[in-house]
Length: 114
Image (cartoon, rainbow, N blue to C red):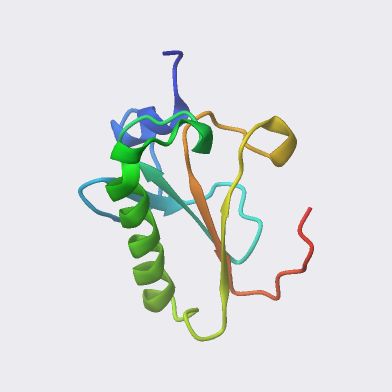
């Protein structure tokens, strides 16, 4: 595997502003936020993209969504609304080849995105 920015963050080699974490997932503030609240949730296990998710990753995906729910409640956006986004591939905006879930909130989000 090539050097991975998010694996280095998980390993503590690169600093991040941690929001929260679980046994399987690490959540931190995006350094280039696209909304007033922009948190990335990443599995601690390296998974290249959503295309590499297998049946044995069900617990990781579930934990990512459950942590996103907890963050939404903690940040008081569970009632006003938030967006969860997986990008897959360069044309979709995936800039880091490590599965990650964006949580965006605290502003009116337009539709369609992009």
